[in-house]
Image (cartoon, rainbow, N blue to C red; front, side, top):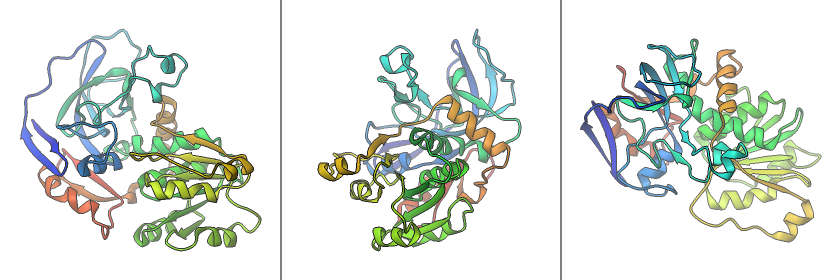
Length: 343
């Protein structure tokens, strides 16, 4: 079968590899239909992804087709031929975090495509309890569910309320997903980005009320949009150290700041200002099964429409050469999609 391996930073190899072994207990064998390319994959390619080692088969935003179901006593509704997506967070189930229900930040977390080889191959075996199916969504939509679940979880973490003013800093796919679910929660959504192309794309999104050019003075622009104060919730989805530390300035007194992205380093802030404002600081990691269910329900009900986000579609043969172009500053790529179907 075709398999794409990132041998080292900057070096993909397309291989012909054996099919996976026979199914184990509580596993399902699936054919990989689509793979969404995400920031984690881009950072792995550049050598800046935390918690990462090489070589690695990337791919955790997956649309899958069930081809076999192993022996299991677990309750499920899967049948051969079903289309589904994968919740790629392989938690241990026994650590303190898991026992308290925080499976998304398991102390022994193994993420498919990050800590373990992922889905950039034609056939894989996955745990049956990590599979979410839909009888309505297309394969491309299912490949976006994991990405959208990150934003859904972040909005849930912040407990966004109706009529709140929300600022999302960074409108790559994750930031756009945060904006969708903040809007569904009833918030007024402002976004900010340094990219003219991404700002132009964001202006077309009905979930977004206003877009700020982050190359200019963000505070001054916020004053013109929110004349009676600052946003009560700020999400930083950049994974950029300078942006994340600057985001403290954009939060209203008594507000919440949520870091959706991460980088390899320390976050610092001016403690007297943090204390004076009585800010709440949140990290948001991965997503839960209920987040996945909410995203699938929203997509099935047409409450969000993200088809236009997919700007690049490639085959395995094309991806090896195309991948570096998605990192170029002038790239207008919003979301790239690898297909093991016919592109």
